[in-house]
Amino acid sequence: MGYSLDFGWLRDAAGAIAHGAAMTLFLIACTTVFGIVISILFAAARRSRYGILRKAVAVYVEVIRNTPFLVQLFFIYFGLPSIGIRLDPVVAAILAMTLNMAAYTTEIVGAGLDAVPKGQGEAAFALGLRPRQVFVKIILPQALKVIFPALISQVIIMMLESAVVSQIAVRELAHEADLLQARTFRSFETYFVVTLIYLALSMAIRRLFVAGGRRVLGAGVS
Amino acid sequence: MIEFTFWDILRNLVFATRWTVLLSAVAFAGGAAVGLLILFARISKQKWLRRFGSGYIALFQGTPLLMQLFLMFFGLPMLGFRIEPWTAAALGLTFYASAYLAEIWRGGVEALPLGQWDAGASLGLHRLQELRLVILPQAFAITRPPIVGFLVQLIKSTALTSIIGFEELLRTANAINNATFEPFTVYGLVAVIFFVLCYPLTQYARMLERKIPAH
Image 1: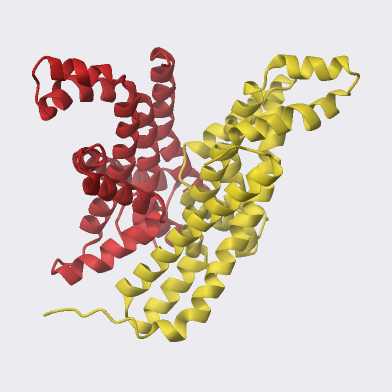
Image 2 (image 1 turned 45 degrees about the vertical axis):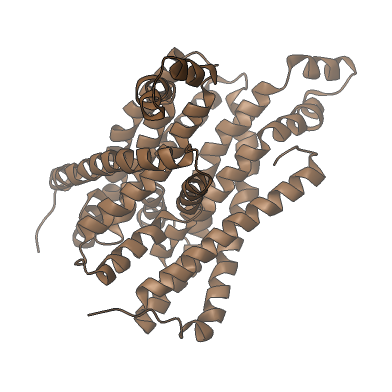
């Protein structure tokens, strides 16, 4: 028995798919902002004078990097309520994504901080800048410039991984696909179309960041 | 109603871990075999083969693994195979792994000095012999750290196959959680088991990285 592909359902489904894609973009936008802020703080903490801070960040990074994102998501969404922390699915998704991505970007930001020559900080001190000014105005911009391509890749990886938050019923792109295929019985076609949309999103995000990076950081990324 | 003690939960989870390990091993082996073919295409002298190779890699690295698994799960039956979570999971992860492994190895091949090819050619080796005897052994050696790093990623990725119904660690955990209503313990233990699987490999990758001098 042959199977014939049918994309006739697509016309009625366009709205739902667009809605899902918007939710996916919203999730990754929040994650990018929170994740990068946290990873700058953590990367700085990892290089601080306080041993306990250094150790705490190191443990956090190892735990997140050596466990699956889906398990982290389930632990946050299903596990935390039993100790009294009940989260909305969208909040749980953003929290899980942020904590996950920050573990990777903390390492990336840290590598960037280490790549800035020591003389830069010393010169800024000599000019009378305060430690915080030295970090924010001199070290950080140079570090971000170096690591920008790696950051873009990490954001895109996280966007692709965000498909699994459909499992806690966040209505993003993958979840809309689940709902659609249950209604139309066109499973393969539905996931095929949505997969292509994810591909387009990842290419669009890369373009956007490259253009933005060139403008804001003057980062020479391809 | 069956009572689950902490040890019952742990025992069941540890038993289910063998499927996670087996799936990782199968996907890694399959991924290496397919990845080698993709690598050959990617570094071929034929332009259309190189295009195919880079398109294949971009496709698998630019789309969510979950969607790839769903496409396998719903696509295989259209080709006349029966829907089975095990085959869909193993094939899906194999193709996923092949793209990443091919890309890592390509980096290794391109990191080698061109003189290595010339030296092989001057000894009268065919291109295939050159690859087998000169290029690939060196490329494999210098890419060992990222390959071990990817193995960690692959082990973590097997958790996604629970969604298409493959009975591995996380799916077993979901079932136990439905019976015990102790998600904090159950998912906490799952995280610990994955950590125990992955952390030694992460450390091993780090050790290899230190051993191999940067070019």
